[in-house]
Length: 240
Image (tube, rainbow, N blue to C red; front, side, top):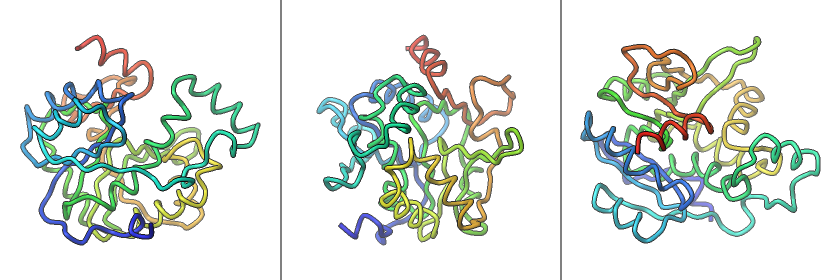
């Protein structure tokens, strides 16, 4: 399945991609309501194990592509060290072992994007304005942009919103690194952070207004508000 590590060459224009399985599909309509209020860029939905009804709904709003990993690509619970297993289960008491498969799909979905310039969004992202200015961050350097901030003198990256140019080397490296090292990682972000540090990659950060965490006071100019974690999901549920 080498094609999973290669770019989709039949890409054109600007567009948005999202992906979900059945456990997270409850956010689809909420996400679409906010996105479509301010934007009309085409959206490609990646089916990572949706229900039939969710797949049909997505097809009414954009295009849908199914994605799954070949057997054995994502390390199962039995292949994780006892130390990591205990730490991860304490950190994330939810559907960790089901969720990891969807989380690790992110770089592979970027490679399969049908757009020349792609914006990936997690479904817990509330779009509040036009995302047109965000596409510009796909143009400089390596053609890959995420949120970067400093915490306790460490560089922290968040992949809830990603801007990417077709042909960028970062998603290819990220996907290959994920295939090889996912047994040591909780999710996609730690894989990317380790790879950036080890290879000295230069990532173009985009401003906080394009991926603003719910837990900090909001800026009136926020474009995308990210309701990450359990607290954020509770806020989304309250809005449904």
